[in-house]
Amino acid sequence: MRKKNYLALGQLILFLCILLILTKFSPLLPFDGDDWRYVGGVRQPIPLWGVWNPTRVLPEVLMPIGGMIGAFLVYPITKDYVGSLAFAEGFIEAVFVFAVLYYFYKVLIKRIRLSKWPAFICEIFFFLSFFFLFKRFNIPSYSGFWAADLTCVFYYIIPGLLNLAIILYMLQVKDFVQFFNKSSNIKKGIFFALLYFTIFSNTQLNIIIASFCFIKCLPIIYQSFKEKSFNAFIKNSWIYIAILILWSMTVVFDLNGKRAKYVSDVNNGSFLVNLLRTLQQFINFVKEQNLPIAGLLTLTLISTLLIAVNTTIKKKRNRALSFEYIKMEFYIIFSCFCSLIYLILAYTKAGSTYASRPDAMWAVISLFLLGVNLAVAYFMKIVPIAISSLPLLCILLAIFSFNMNERPIYAANASYDSYTIKKVDNYIINQIISADRKGKASVVVKVPQDSEDSSPKVTTSNWPHPYNMAIWLQNTLYSHHIIRSRIHIVFKPDKKVNEKFYENKSEEQPFFPPE
Image (cartoon, rainbow, N blue to C red; front, side):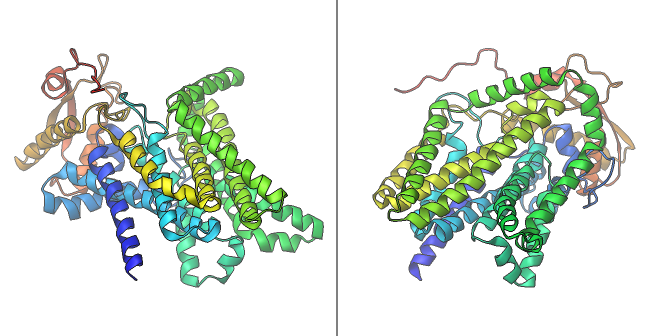
């Protein structure tokens, strides 16, 4: 019992560390027009034909729910509105990150047959790998949880985390369909609810579960073909088939949405030229990683697979375990490869720059790291003495990953320090609150001039504080009961606001390492 309590305490500490990182190390502060648009307005929780985002149900429901939690539960305690929103949204992401880590831990216990403490250490290593893959010492670096802004955390990272958590849940057992058929109705209902939001999240991320289900179907198809039994195929793969049908529906819906039509008009041109541009952007994405570490992780994956194959062929000890590991690794590697091909083709049409962004390539990142960490866990199982090196390795990698010699790369749409972002947010919001409390029907709000050629005639200009952000900010402040009426807000970009709040980097000094 005491060991279980210690393990539960360890899991709690891990969750609190994740929460600390997402609320202090890299806080999720709303800043640009998209953030204020989606943090305060809930969409209909069903796919919608012909709208801007037809199937992105999860992000456009969960993000405003986080906004409401921050505004109505956290803000009354902290009296810090922007900080409350950041804490609530950070807490939600921390829950999803922890869910992935916990189900990875469960897979290691049930399928790799690691004992609990080694599995827990491997769980920590899995979390750290999202950071040290990108970490470059004394240089601003990305992480595996980087996103362009708060909205992109909910559009990319959280859908990816939910997809990964679901396939880890399915990987806990050899035959998930049989396991599911024997589950209670409550468990089935919870799974279907989560599956709904997994599929209707983002077609750039639900490729994770789609490719996984496709590869799971292949051996069932082969066996059914040998037995010449179509009924057996349906019986043994109906969940995977249903998921693939729903996934196909999301693709059809999104291809007929307003965003797809807009992107199609903007990114016209030769397919070959666009493909080459996308591949070049993907190469740039690879270069943003710590290449020696990426190479070492790849070598670890390949070497461990070769060991497992050799063990299986020569019928050595751990043959059954090795065969199970090879199957799981094959599912993950195939899913990673399918996701990469799918995203390259999608970004050839949607815009090549997506292929250079860690958040837009999260499906590939996460599946690669999952494959590597399964390899590490398998190696720990067949070479138990190696477990003794893992705690020290985790400590060294944590120091390497989280040293603050240089801060992480800021979000693309908010390339300022979190202190600056919060000050600017409060400055803008306080002008609106002041006008509302004075009973004014409209207010002209000074915002930073973020673009030299901004014009009210182009409502999307002056990003990240575009003119049309005034509408979305009014929506959010009213829905969160920060203002009493839907006051008419007009943005007025002003360079003096920049001078007052933005950092002056004209004489910025380089980092001087102590050694």
